[in-house]
Image 1 (cartoon, one colour):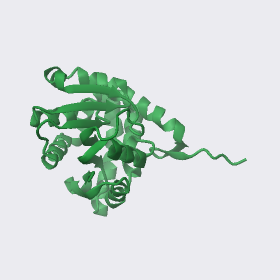
Image 2 (image 1 turned 90 degrees about the vertical axis):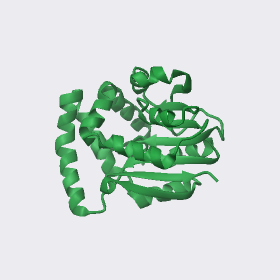
Image 3 (image 1 turned 180 degrees about the vertical axis):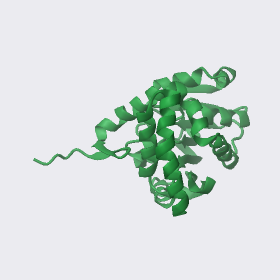
Image 4 (image 1 turned 135 degrees about the vertical axis):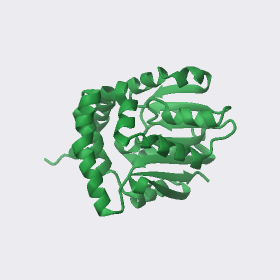
Length: 249
């Protein structure tokens, strides 16, 4: 008898949808303590430029309330709060180990009264409708089992006039450059993960998950499908990463 169980991808593997969240949780639990170091090494520090560009486009201000989904160790939230001293940020992540690592960062002590740390599922946010002014998700939405549902939830919890911003790895339009980038990703990053985090398999998954993520135009369509208006994107570093933006009008 044919099964009606829906499947999805975990890197290049096909798995039951119900299994993916636990598998992703395992990946980030394994790498939590070395996650920030690996980000610097893998991207040669360029991820910091991308995140600052995200803030430049976002322009945090006033007493805005940020929901930073897949916020992990707080990188985006810390940047947001530094630019908007009266704002408040909720760092939301599925992995408690990532949140715990974030709490241990020096910035977390300095901003403790303006930060909340919440563990949960991006497809079922534990927040009321129309709660936040800004929703960000940085290098996290490709790990969600059903990204469209995460975008739908983003729309739900944002206030009218609220802003969505997604920073994610994407596709390089130039085939030769994509080929070179693939060689680096598959041949360098997993061994690097083994050396620094003692975990090659998790970084093999992360590299594969990038290749399975929709291209810029396809993802733009998903943002619009969730209800966001004035949706657009900007490529970062030739399309290695991409910023998508949309508004709840």
